[in-house]
Length: 238
Image 1 (cartoon, rainbow, N blue to C red):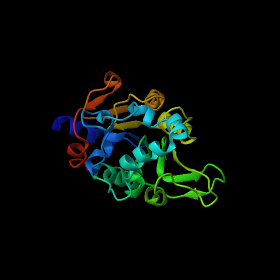
Image 2: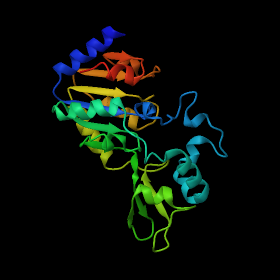
Image 3: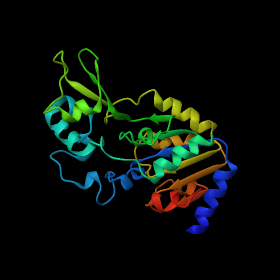
Image 4: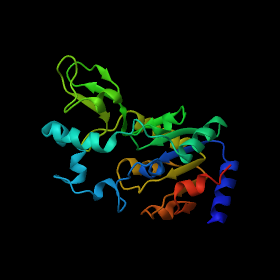
């Protein structure tokens, strides 16, 4: 595997317009569970199917139960970035990395200091009242008992993309960044969730790289695949 890491370093050195596309596996080294691994969030028994627990239908029909699940599993306010987040921030500082596109809602890329972060599934840090549209931060949501309510009495909804909802404008911007990149780093994602996974089809550049501990159905599309834990790769890169 060291040969593959060496090859990855050479690709990064040669590239000048790099984009990173990250999934849940990027945050597992910070102690956050992913979704589909054997110990992931979806392995837990829940009253409803796991994906329904994170659906807009669940939010509007079973709001209290939605928030019980959401607060128990998505409070990352005190979680710190790991070596992968830190490496991408440093790569951005060099001018090589132009954007981080993430499926994650944990805010760790921003917490690590990355400036251009496109959160295509939203973030726990942004929340709005459904009645008056007043903004509330993540601290307010996770510290509120039961269903978080606005001072106007309206229910507050997280600005995260639930199953059954449209993706935010950041998705179209992400597609543009990928189309212009000369290298795309796909990190810690099973490439199962659509339409996010189809973003890689917009890539027209030179180096398409996947680093993920498990194989994906897209592996043959990549120029380089490393089935490794991300920290084992990024702690060796310069």
